[in-house]
Length: 417
Image 1 (tube, one colour):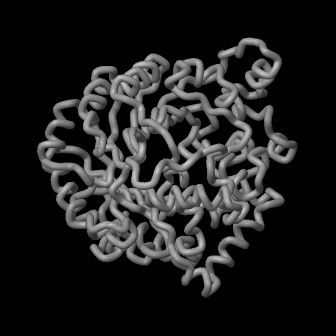
Image 2 (spheres, one colour):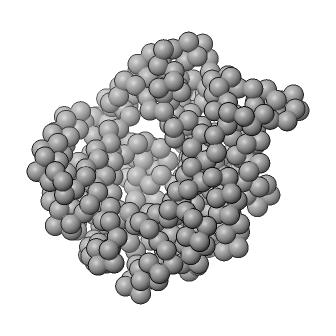
């Protein structure tokens, strides 16, 4: 890792970047489309995903994969939107397998048939992560604004039939966290090998719905106790992961294990990011894989060197004895909550903005928070939010969620064309 920010200094002075000390990427996340049949209220896709853009073609994705593998990336995540909506998914998987990636499909299951899973198996797909919204049909279908629970259950059975490890993911929040016991029992019936109970982190659509989705401390404590007890019950048969939300933490996470250090994300239109929500950050021109090589983007681009190391940090973070453990936390969260991406992540108890988390929790407990309408992730709402931003109808915090200059696509047009 570029510890002292020398890469940024070189870029600013016009000198070549010294690549020594910059690790190659290990994990490539390919968001192959933003089209999705679900409308999840906590979706991490950008709130302006329905902007004018063209998805990468099959050939362009294959070039991205080849360039990523040449740099050393070994893990490939195929996500969206819903990646199964790409007709060329099997071709992309086959090329990734040929290149030597460990290929993971992150899916809602919508669009998976027996013929499709058989073709993906033959193409070399290694791993499928299936999402559920809840253990009950009613809440699952409400949270995704679709009738998909029975279909997801059939896909879970197909995953077991075709001898994949059964990896079930459920995002937790105020509306379903009290069902943790039932969710785990459902996972046991489905013979899940791994279950990730990931409390919603409040970015993108989840941030818009934070007042309605932020659980109480009591809910979290109870849910973790239930999970711990269930973990003992299924020891040796199922691995459980319970991820706490940042809003009840005192120490920030080392976001993405460091900016431009392990993870590289390619959006549906070819924009390349160090994490999947970084496009909202102002003053950074993120390069596109259509225009630049993945190698140049990772090692030499101003965007990927912006927050590498500690040269960019303020004194509070640079002199902190926890610096190596968290690298000042998340740049996107710092920007969302403080308006300045160089500030310490407000999750940190030493941050002068740490009080904003307690204020958000208090706001979510007010009765009026529960009657606010939930915003579902839909093409229509994404376009409408962009229009509201231009009209000045959003709060300052919500305006920070948008990519600078994003323009809504035409009403009723297909996303990504």
